[in-house]
Length: 79
Image (cartoon, rainbow, N blue to C red; front, side):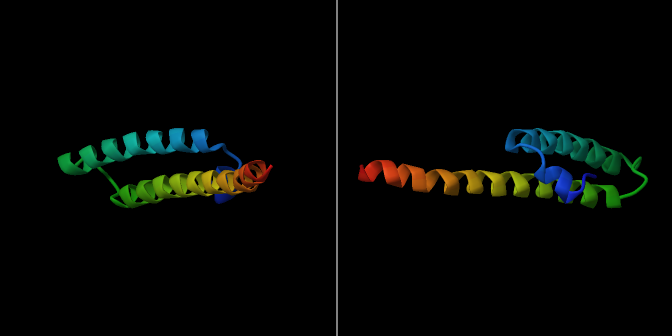
């Protein structure tokens, strides 16, 4: 699990890639849980939360970029 600061240092695309990797890990964990091989079911919850963190930080960055671009676009329309 990465810290929140480490996640904030990544680009939105890197965060989405990490979320995709975590989704694959979650799929593997769910298969293990269904077959009775999984040692700790807490890993499922931890992985789900890590996915949510990655996607949340990526969304925050997307919104920040949109807010930064909005005044510039509005200024160009007035000219």
